[in-house]
Image 1: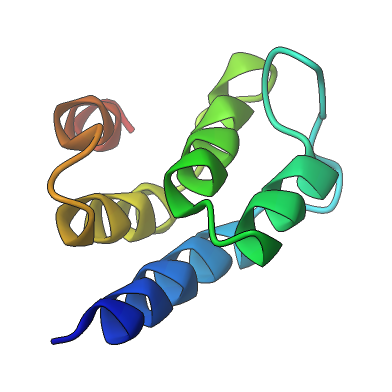
Image 2: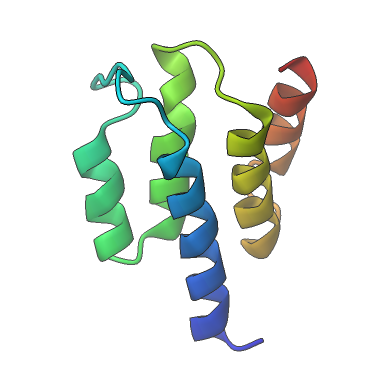
Length: 93
């Protein structure tokens, strides 16, 4: 798989996770912001986009296992960035 394909798969996983967020999600400077997430996606800053999504846990109850699985999938494509963290969250969910 070439780099462009990999980025496409990572972005798809992140967008899939985003689409699972409820409409009443709490946003904050220390957690998750929808605008920041999309700014990172647009700039192809996929690690920052992933970290923006995982910030949702700061001000909200933990999301579904499916949400965290998408982040695990993206993490694996990125060389296991934050993989241990996401696996521990999904086990506790």
